[in-house]
Amino acid sequence: MTNHTIAAISTPAGYGGIGIIKLSGPDAIPISLSVFKPRPVSTDQRTDKGPCPEDAFPVSRHFYYGHVVDDNLDRHIDEALFVVMRGPRSYTGEDVVEIQTHSGPFVLKTILTALIQKGARIADPGEFTRRAFLNGRMDLTQAEAVIDIINARSARSIDLAMSLVAGGLKQEIECLRDSIWTVLSFVEALIDFPDDMDGESDAAAMISSLEKQVIPQIQTLITRYDEQHFLRDGLKVVIAGGPNVGKSSLMNRLINKERSIVTDIPGTTRDFIEESFTAKGVSIALTDTAGIRDNPDSVERIGIEKSWEAISEADIVLLTLDAGKAIHVNDLSLFERLANKKMIIVINKTDLPDDHILLSLPKEWVSIETVRISALYNLGIDDLKEKIAQMSFSSEVCSEQNIVPNLRHKQCLEKSLQSIEDARSGFLNSIPIEMVSIDLRSAMDALSEITGEVVKPDILDAIFSRFCIGK
Ligand SMILES: Nc1nc2c(ncn2[C@@H]2O[C@H](COP(=O)(O)OP(=O)(O)OP(=O)(O)O)[C@@H](O)[C@H]2O)c(=O)[nH]1
Ligand SMILES: [Mg+2]
Image 1 (tube, rainbow, N blue to C red):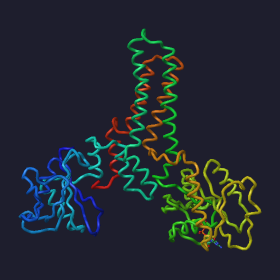
Image 2 (cartoon, rainbow, N blue to C red; image 1 turned 90 degrees about the horizontal axis):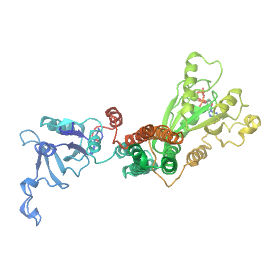
Image 3 (cartoon, rainbow, N blue to C red; image 1 turned 60 degrees about the vertical axis):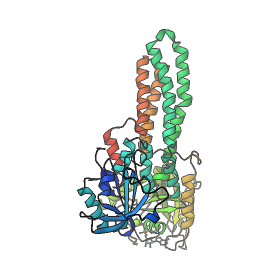
């Protein structure tokens, strides 16, 4: 795969000031030079060093001004800046060329077509970064962080991604692997030279080492995912409640646009509706759901099933009530099903003269965070946003620690932890030491999957297919 020179338009489609075409591979320089004509440098413009020798041209990391030209080298397609980053010290580890022109779809496509005619091939999504990973320029956690930066919607998600780019998780994983490796070498010595070792005290030392230097560290990383992944993935907030309480009105207020249909007919929202917004620096994926009630028609029933699905995946549920009505039995059962969820009780329609809801609120609800709003008159919405943001940060494990694994990392960490636990109970129950060695090796492998030392091609395909073309 790495023998081909690849090319792609790296800037987003559309019209703009600058468009960049990127090439990478062994022929990136000759192919790009065949469509680029540098402006001749007059004697008085040359530096003291004199003109660049033929074999060093173009000099790495220097900008050249000139024109992209057609096949006969006479018709100018566009003005261009041309920069080469010679491998191995480039993004991909190969020779990389960037041609910067004006950004218009036709101009960029014409240049890309010319490059393809000269021997480049169109890059697959994420192929530049995939090459960077395969050529050892970054590990897999750093490659994944590149897409996190591109997708970032808040300053906090950028911080998180940058700590991965800097190799924070990679270092933590390397530390863990070193600790497991130390235990594993003892185990292997025990297998090879059983007479030279004191099985019982060595086993106790190894158990202690796993308990102090491996298990808590892995658990902390898993907890960090559970409690802070929303900083990267967005916080999932679901508006739930009975029909007609004003859930869709609330959604529209929170996102500040008329996205969800509002009517006075109960059962208006039948499918869940998702939109994103940012509150106090936290990126939030908000879902409006169908009102939960008994005896719905068949379409509404499907909507209500979807509401339950959305609720089960939510980080925070906004249990919405109508201030003008006494609490309903469906609200009580909804509350019960939300027992393990973070929840905010949102009392809507507080503009109505009769506040029946307050009198009917069960005692055990009093301790729950409650916000009074009027979605119709846009009252209390900022207060609610503030509460959502506060609640999202209330359980951060360690706010100064920004290394947060993603879901794939977390799954590998869980696999590794399971194998470590198996190895630990293997020691405790004196099972054959060869079995313990297998468990320790699989714990190492699961960690290596995170950084990409051991990884199946289909996992790489899944990761890099999330990238855009040209990155
Ligand atoms: N007085 C008052 N009326 C409101 C308020 N919020 C919503 N409404 C009205 O309540 C009715 C229902 O609003 P929706 O936002 O559609 O309620 P919903 O909970 O999404 O309803 P379903 O989708 O049917 O479950 C509409 O007539 C709204 O104008 C409010 O704060 N005050
Ligand atoms: Mg609705």
